[in-house]
Image (tube, rainbow, N blue to C red; front, side, top):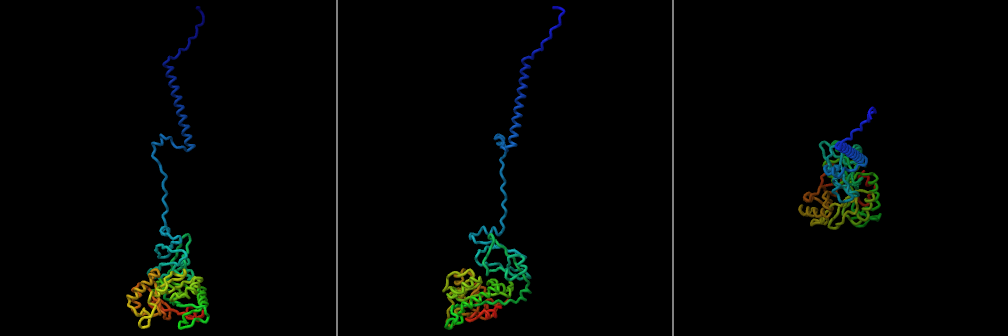
Length: 389
């Protein structure tokens, strides 16, 4: 029909090739979108939950390990304690001016043993104290030595060195009495016989020891006395050594409980072919009164002045072994000695020997001729005070 409006033309349909390309692009975009969502989701989950990486990734990473912490080094005292098997062992350390002393083991509840006696030029050692301040003050009753039972806190303790001058040591001019007891009796009137004076009434002995304890005398060890004689150790004037001869049954039964209760260091000179037992008290040192020489020889005097130096040395060596190997001091039987006896004592390796001669130990006293203060029957506390102050 001519003269009418023309009909609109229909859009051209894309070819199949174009349609395939469009579908491919749309599909690729969808896959990429899904992958992106998966990555974001996985990362978020890892961040929030702290989960480990996928195994495939982890297999390609080097393994990591937690570093082992470095242990704190042991102190010398702690290292020493690790070697100890006794549960009562205590590591004792030493401190103070000029001290370079390694720690040593002690045993709680046992007398301090072998405390070092230090030396340094121009000074005299004045003992060990529980603190630096006490070492500076040098109050006698604070001083620690082998007359006391070892005590520790958490199996350790430190002692501090004190020093004085040679001039002060000489000026003090200490005179050390060594008390000598023998037997004891419960009879106020004493015992009969020629040994009557040897037997001290036990109630008098109790008063003697109570006085010593109350006055807080310093009780030196034999090692300390040896160093004091050499001028290497300061001992206060208020010092005292207590001894008993023979280890008689009356000493063991009557007197030992007294010195134990009063916590007084005492030396018992033992005839070892008669007594082989250990010490009867923590406060009693057992030392040699010889093994078999407490008998009279051909001249009526003790064997100490009848035998050769080698025979004397052999007897003393046997006695020392019975007593645990200690060789600090011996007591001459009957007080008899001569140059040969002193030679035998020296050959046996002993440092000191005690006589029965009256007197006091001072700086320079002959070490094999130590004098004593003999205590006899009837001696009162006033008599004791007159001798020891």
